[in-house]
View (cartoon, rainbow, N blue to C red):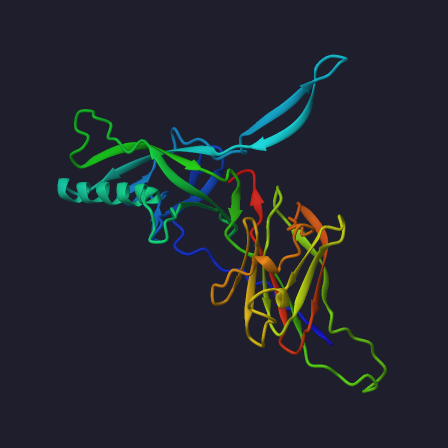
Length: 324
């Protein structure tokens, strides 16, 4: 059967404020996106709030903890490298035409940052995002939680129509994500006669053998979405041999029917149907290895069983970077 591939669509970053020169990253436009999705421009110097470049830090390479063992011939040998959560220091000036307008802006921004610490209805905490956009159209973002610092300067004349705060934002994942998802799509097309118009060989089992490119600096953990019909699917990383199988017939759901989907997250390990069913028992534990994609090129294969016209696999990931 023919394999249909879809092009990668690169969306535009909305509402980008004017770029300014920011320490550690250079000329860029920066926006804070709070947990409600509201966008707060941080580099528009004509707005009622903007970043004070003097004092910005934490936008460079991720911090690491190194574990080493003494070497009998002297010195040490590096045994383990562990990336650590990072802190971003973010000075912000807030102002208003009068005291009433300034107070409203001050309170609104405080709520936008501290909202990251509030529990959502499902019991989780939703982070904010700090986005850094470049003049060439590229953009990266990092998930942030408010830590401390929303305090006024306490100086003469401050707190009336203007004041500034030096906010510390805590990032549990120290790496920056590309705002544009990278995708690989494989779909089973309509079958053709073996002898028409000439002898041909096709497979309803191997849906895609391809090379996936991770343009980032560190490993990414992709998400897979499988669209039925399908009974089982094997995901293999050919350079290491790591693989995992999702056997739908081993779950309470049964085989995927036409149009039904199941989504597999590799970090954290999670398998959900489009109706929210937990199907993680369909993975071939303990042999299953939910592998990552390292920087560069990685050969992968998706082998789908029970495939018919419309069966598809979508791989999605966001490249991760050391710096903004």
